[in-house]
Image: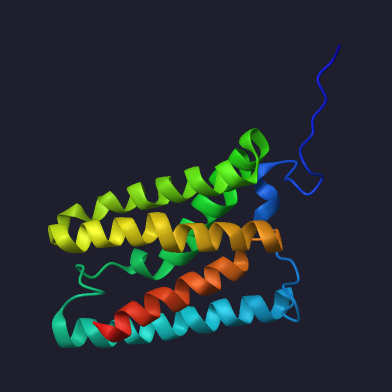
Length: 161
């Protein structure tokens, strides 16, 4: 007797599916691209001001790579990793594992943050922000609303520092 796949039909057929632009409610791909570009510009201008005032970008040494973090992290964690895990293990495990990996990813900041800041960042990204953006990606079947949310999150952090 052969085993049948009982996963819902909404699951990704390949991990790159979540990288496509899709309509998110009333927000079509063109508006999503425009919002991502506008948030990139706002982030760049805000961080440029911070570098002039403090010599730091969000508490880190200046590096242009910081400007692309929302895009690259969403592609990696919600596009590729979440998509592959969803195929292999289903949506619940995919959200949990990809979120924990996202939190662990932030250990890279051990060189710039205090122990308290690092633990806070890893817990926040692994248990709050990661699951929210993962569920958003699965609900919308695209990472781009999560990219927008990621830029807004990072802008808010830059503004309150």
